[in-house]
Amino acid sequence: MVYWIRVLQGSMPGIRAEKTAKSYTQYLNYFLGFVKIKEAGGLLQLKDTVINEIVEDWVLYLKSKGLRKSTIRGQLLSCLWL
Image 1 (tube, one colour):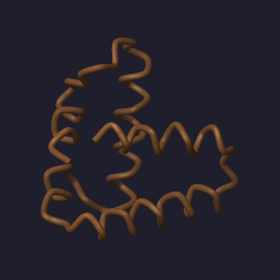
Image 2 (image 1 turned 180 degrees about the vertical axis):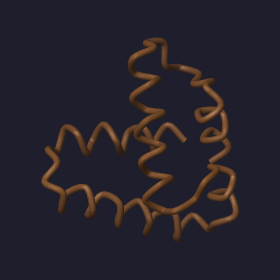
Image 3 (image 1 turned 120 degrees about the horizontal axis):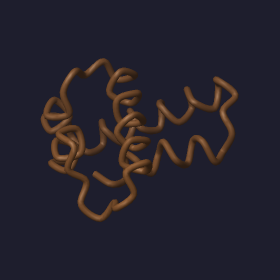
């Protein structure tokens, strides 16, 4: 989860393409907005099981908005970098 802090500060090791880094940062911001957490550090205080439930809820929310699987996958991958 510490990776989120690095991502939001603009440091994304392993991601070389600037466009990918921007997309992942945008998706992470969407996710943080969904969970109503202003800073990624707030997620560090949650248990892994709670985080998993939040991510599952987020995916269901994205599906309910009619997003394509490829779009949802991209947004989910941004979280898996953590």
